[in-house]
Length: 71
Image (cartoon, rainbow, N blue to C red; front, top):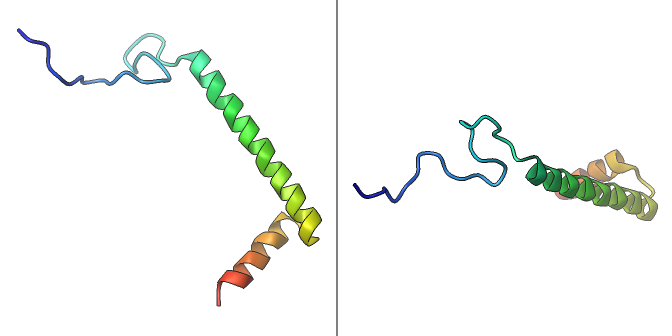
């Protein structure tokens, strides 16, 4: 019998599958968390730069943008 061209459970990048005894690959999740932390640091830096340039805090910047974009 030939093997089908599809799989019921696709190979995931984070683990071997949800039906295995260890579904999550910790090394892959470490990379995702590291990337998430770095993006958060860039967002915080962008908020600091925006506050320095505009004199408004993050909430003030959002409010100013809403007043500018909404009629």
